[in-house]
Amino acid sequence: MNKNICLEELIKTNNKEHSFRLTLKRKTIFDIIRKMPGHSSVEEILDETRKDGNKIGIATIYRFLNLMNRKGFISSMSGNDGITRYSISLTKKTHHHLICKACGKIIDIADNYLIETIKKNNPGFEIPDQSISFYGICHECRKSSNTNGDKNVQHRN
Image 1 (cartoon, rainbow, N blue to C red):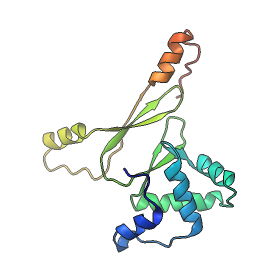
Image 2: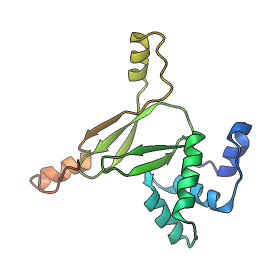
Image 3: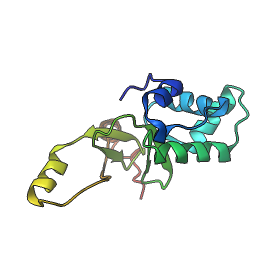
Image 4: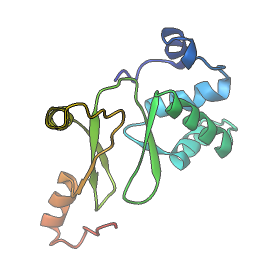
């Protein structure tokens, strides 16, 4: 995934079915998501727009994220905290998520083995979309709990 791509390039390099009107607000939202690490919630994106002094409403952010998600340029997923998070998804490569039950951190993992195994064992079964999340405790939280006698790890449900 090339997070350095700008919205103008994205519109130019894709066919007409992906074209849409480029506004300053849309460009600003896209640039903020592009610069943020990992998966971001709408509230985090809104906070970043306000830090930069932009007056972009939460409804505008939701509409833009939904548009970009429908066009396949942004992916969305719900974490174990129930909050939907978004990230730029410029490639169609399969990836899954590791989600820390202690801190909520989301880690992307590439795994084509699983999908290829399913296709091999189920000939003719078409899988146009997939989403798999694995829940556990990340390295940092495990390390923290080991040094603090498991006092700092509070599992989210």
